[in-house]
Image 1 (cartoon, rainbow, N blue to C red):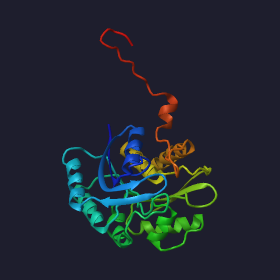
Image 2 (cartoon, helix red, strand yellow):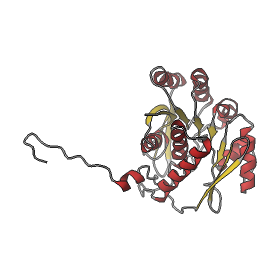
Image 3 (cartoon, rainbow, N blue to C red):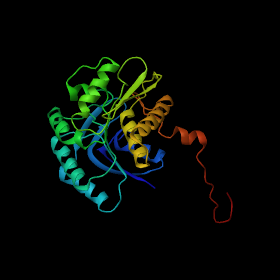
Image 4 (cartoon, helix red, strand yellow):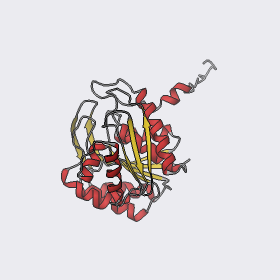
Length: 276
């Protein structure tokens, strides 16, 4: 079984962050592991508060995984502070894992900031060059590039600009755009478009986490970047189409829809007298 590590913040409501990553890994048949960098008190409607884990402890969690288990891919999500970014970057440079997918999480679904503004420079300098695949949404890409993105052409320009910062490939996600749900991948040589009909639902909590984790899982299983992005796009589209109306705000996607549709085996256990 392939093994994939998520380095990200937690979401106690279960729809995003580490919790969404582990669900996505399981849905893809890979073994999920986690390094928690921040504990976030959030639900489908708001972020109440967040508390960062000490950078030293972040590094030790990464050490604990790599000294014992072979890691086939790494997904990096929320990194709120420059100190946390430095701790993660140092360990990635030490262990040199393959298939690093980075989702530069800056905001929660409701717009609450999850990355300190002063961390943007460190993100560009230390984190983006670590990425085999970087997956910003349009607002994140605008902040990284300091440009407005109003069209597919702008998305391509932003992807090229971020690629030049050191990322191996860049996927600009079009969920915040208008029209169809268009994502654009740039690998340094070619642009690839992944376009689906937009699904109009408020229940999209954790879609970015889910998408990037699905890419990491597919890369761990040997898919090319283009194949991994295509498979992840199909997976997250299904998860959104069957999103769950849980909570009062933006509900989560259904990470296990295909499993539930095909049927989860229900085990019947015999008791001590042989009855079921």
